[in-house]
Image 1 (cartoon, helix red, strand yellow):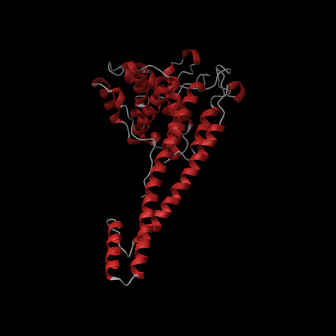
Image 2: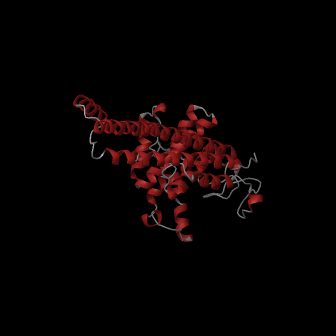
Image 3: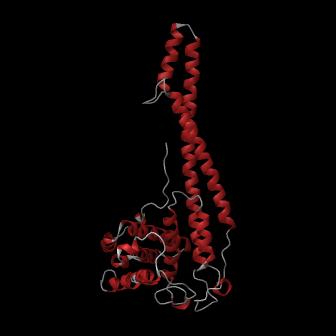
Length: 313
């Protein structure tokens, strides 16, 4: 009854038929903690979808997705007390955390099978305006894969922290991302090396919005299918109520027998004349809850449409 929709499900790349070499790279991630591993899967999935929206060729999409899978591989060597800390990191701890980019880059460069994807770990925290790390590169020196993974990584980091179970309130996260398409000269980012740029590529952010909007519509469609199922169950049990009323109203033995058969036919496993009313009320409550959920999702779509992305490119 209380089916939960997890729109950050395990990455699906079936259409790309990952070969044995790529599976090797994925197996490398098995040393990560479960939270970082899940995050890596989410970022790879989102990166893949953004690349598809951008109309990039299949070869680059697979490459970029693999870079995204490996983007946090350096966190294997970050102390757990820092990696799993609840709350804000101290300045010293943050400096340690930042090293996962260069550590991951070195890990990839030292492994011939991982070397092609070294840009993922190195560039996923860089910004077009030079405010990122580890090297503070600007637009001209920031590879396109790094720009894409930066958007996917930051989005999933926020949603994971907020523990969203559906697309409700995801517009708040998209607003945070959209704010990072504002040029630094306007947003007053003091550390920007090129104030004419923003941290994130607006074109890529646009594609992120399209992906999330599509996923929201998919969630709405799934909930509507469940509402249709619930409506059918409610109609069935209301029919039982009608047959039961007729059964209790008649004195004709033959009619009683017929109504009893109809009642039994419409009762499903675990349902009885004694408890069907309770089951009926549960279905009605579930239906009301799902209808309210759809209303909230439709409101979320409206909020997403109102968010402005600053197109400086």
